[in-house]
Length: 310
Image (cartoon, rainbow, N blue to C red):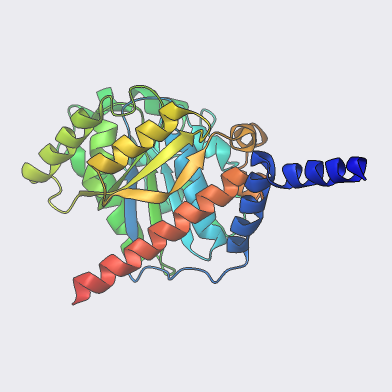
């Protein structure tokens, strides 16, 4: 009888273990995969994803939010302004030397519609790819008149001429505050900032916010605002990650999403297969987290639109 009691205790202990609770939580969260999709925006939302600090999950956030929204029924465009071209790679888009891309739009005056390529990802997701020439674009832009407005004009022309509207445009910036990033700020209405839950999480953020303020105050784009902060690389097991998350939420209570992106193997693996984690393993904790974030972004946008209409 004692042996039987011990067995029952062991089973009970296993059920109450942290791993079991984590699995049960993930199972519950997976219901979002079959839940009703959030509302689509009435007007195209243009979001620049930026953080001058490298390694914060900026490109990963860009492509996975785009893929999640496309999976939820939105028509999404990703503009890869980073010369490294990682967003293009993650979306399965060729960006080798000689392939038309966003460089041709910025430097040669090509139409954005002529360089956009459909991604093999699920849903309607498109990409204006990077290419190696983009690395020298900032120098080539220096003598150009109204160089800060080139991307904005290209996007405006695209949206005006498109028979089928885009619901979201995501601009993936390089990890610097140069002319490429300035073009992104001038073109967008919203800035989305990924912040990693590690040491020096807020490092450089004040400079980024100062730059955004200058863009607004100097009249380059008076409508630009930081709309969203997303916590990335979160490890709930560490005190540091929880302290950083609390610190960021205290600083920016109205901007930080409830959804948090964890450190996850699938998120790291997906780009090597030319996929987002949302298509690579839609039931993984990383994919579910990005889908939750995408739903929250969509819902916040719908609320803001309703408030603006009142």
